Amino acid sequence: MLVIGAGPIGLEVAYELSRAGVEYLQVDKGQIGSTIAWFPEQMSFFSSNDRIGIAGIPLQTPGQRKCTKEEYLAYLRTVASARNLAVRTYVEVIDLRRQAEGGFVARTNVPSLARSFVSRKRRACAARESEIEARNVVLAIGDMDRPRRLGIPGEELPHVSHYFTEPHRYYRSRLLVVGGKNSAIEAALRCWHAGAHVTLSYRRAAIDERAVKYWLLPEFIGRVRRGEIDCHYGTVPKQIRPGSVLLGPDGREVAADFVLLLVGYVADQRLLEMAGVRLDGPEHRPILDERTMQTEIEGLFVAGTATAGTQQSYSVFIENCHIHAARIAAALTGAPPPADPRPITRPES
Image (cartoon, rainbow, N blue to C red; front, side, top):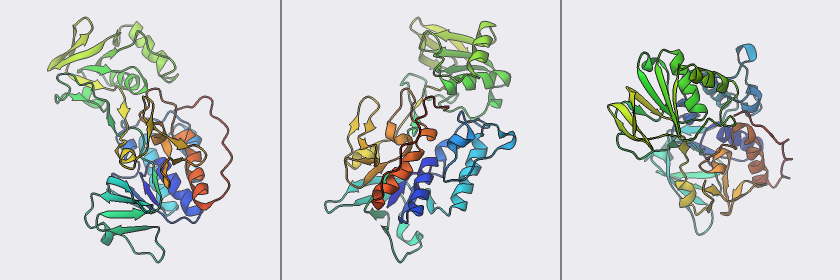
């Protein structure tokens, strides 16, 4: 078994496979939790700790408050060590093909891959130079591979970023934040508190209260009403210039020393497409059997937020993906499928 991806659900898949006695090899193109690593510094998760804990190891934080990015990365390292999960990091799978006789061949970016793995008497995967042969594959590759691009002039200028890392760099600067969901609202508030002059551009006529967490929205609305944060509803950037941004549809010009384009992220579904998986709907969700997480391609499974494709309105999170790991382990061992968890009617994420 080859597991591609070592985020939280990928690690949980590895744990369930090891518990079920299924040999596996796990790789990730970055470090474990690599997507989480580029979240803003000291960002708190929206989900409660009990909802994002994995592999049977409790997630504890001082004061029982919500976990920060840094604490969660440390927790993932603890899980990998405590559960002795065999993860090879910085191994990117660049091609995935189904073989005519069954099973898969995954080509990686590591030329000496075969020599870097410890040999085993029983092997579920065989490494041959840069290739891995596996009877079964799990794709736990997430849904936030890269930022959504606007495709407008000036988007690549050095003062423009699709990632909010920390607020200090925007102190006493004019900052335009583009977007209207959690990431954009939190960035706007944190940068305002750090002393930035913040303006927000959002394409809709108002912020959707369902898209922003309850502890962020009241403060944001209050600061806009008091004129502390300037907000341009019903606008979209048309051109970014050094020192300003032109907003449509009326062409108004907004001063900006820095621009944060926080308009969402897209999934990398190339491996699914290479393996022949059909993708459905505008979000390009992989077609699969929810009871087993197996796609229409025999032996190819999908777990975690990758099951949702590129989410427009987020509904699949860490907290409601845990069952995927147990379903895959049961399908591979012939065990009865696990009971469905109690539905989360209102995810916290």
